[in-house]
Image 1: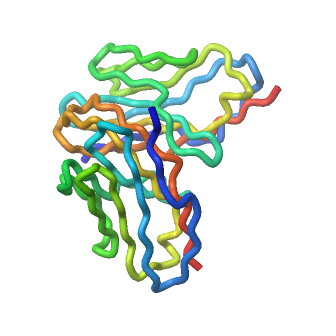
Image 2: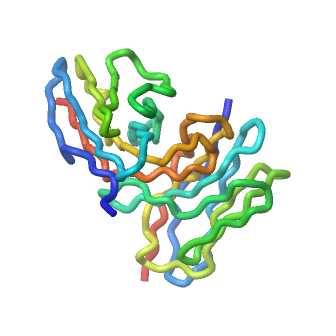
Length: 113
Length: 115
């Protein structure tokens, strides 16, 4: 079945450091891929998405590229801020009506000043 | 435009009781999905409703049920509560063309604690 694998956390960085959170997936066909972020005590917010191979999603300085050949969708940011501290979830949705989002386990990012 | 509203935000229940959680989707959204979030299992899909019909269901026991009303508001019910049902329950709404790229917008969740 379809699945998402994220790197284990927590990830601890200093402000202005470069961030990479790895995400790989298993799915048939061409799913859509998403990154969601969850701040403490909150629900999930969509950070970015990509819907086909080689698409790059970007938002708030975060980027991720849909790599079909490596089945990956790694999240990157060139310079993190303390306010980026949160839990990040990689997710996919198969290309079929009514299918659910399938999430990775989440990666906790902690940024210190 | 108001976001997804979940009520209540927090609940404490006793084992064996039942509970009902409510979700009001974004205006115009016809699809509502429910997810359970726990530290051990992460985010797990419960079910999805579209136009008052359950369109998809996850791998949860029959104690977990839901419904959707004509105004797209949704409720989920858990009967005979167990300690393991303690979790954050998240509701997500979407326009639901059924396409894979449809964005899901999440509420803040209901934190259920079973004692």
